[in-house]
Image (cartoon, rainbow, N blue to C red; front, side):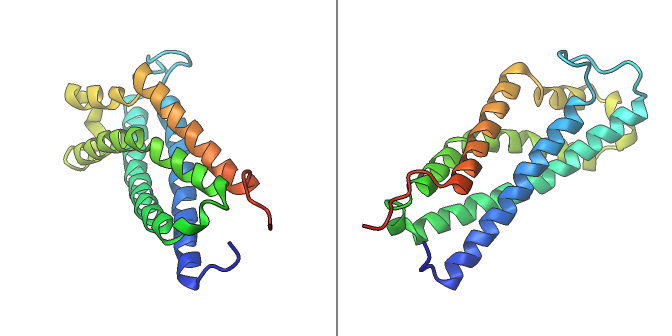
Amino acid sequence: MNTLSTGVKFLMSIVVLCAVLWFGGSVVRMAIGYDLFIPGTLSIKPFLSPSEINYSIRIFSLAGFYTAVCYAITWLSSVILIIAIRKKLKANGWLFMAFVLFFLASPIELYQMQLDIKLLLFTQNYDFRSLLDSQQFFELFMQKFTPKLSGLGFASIFANGIAFLYCIWQPLKRGKE
């Protein structure tokens, strides 16, 4: 991998930068979202005021836009990158496995991104100070935290976290022959 062109290195830089922003943003969004609930339940904390809840939901939704953009750039750049370095994947099994894990988790991420876009559009077209007044919005927001989607989201974060670890540790790397 030492003989990569400047263009491929630039593309790798875009992938890494956007992947870090997307992955970190996803973790921060989970912290913001789950902070609204009593631990272990989907009941909103009773001491939070409606304005605090509305603002947290708005920040959660806005952050969804940035993470979705970074994910889309990561995904597209990764496709181009995998095509550009396809001949080097055999000698770098770690990179191949990282791509496999990333693309296997893509359907989950794309479904969550679809919900995030709906949430964002709703918050942009509705006075965010009264988001809780809309039952339709609240149901859409709660969809993000259903046990099934939360489990899939955890599996996605786990798969992508392992992909990042492959990039750091670089196992399955063929030595000089």
